[in-house]
Image (tube, rainbow, N blue to C red; front, side, top):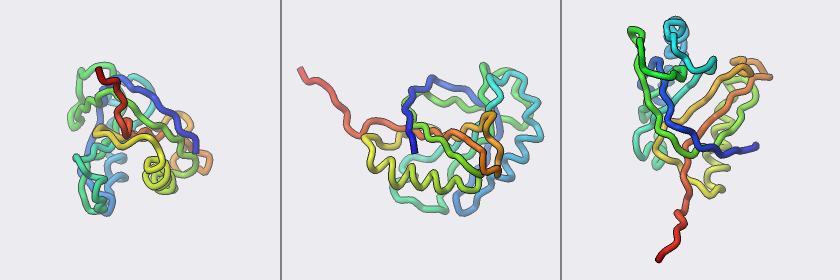
Length: 166
């Protein structure tokens, strides 16, 4: 699977969030609620939809499928103005991200994530950074269609910091 690295700027998002775990997944509930009201957001930066996960520190150090995290259904916005009722805002700091393209139905996503976390990351020169994780669903995203595509962005930082000493 091809991997690209990109430095993203600070980003602003507007949407809905829920606390959940991998074992008590509430993604369907979150997206159903968000899609019913997303047209109320009148300052979206583009047409892409963002599935965002905000994990607590050390979440992946001793993985527990019952551990909770925050999941967002959102769009990127230019400014936090006219926030619709029942929506919230999230600011994601800029930084280095590894980008992977998931091809296939959304239900096969765990295969891509397994590759990222069990193969690519341990074999790379990077470690996870404590910033939001994204799945970006653009015009090629078709949910459960075998031809569907979405980008998965994982926050990373170099495993070793190289510097020149005086």
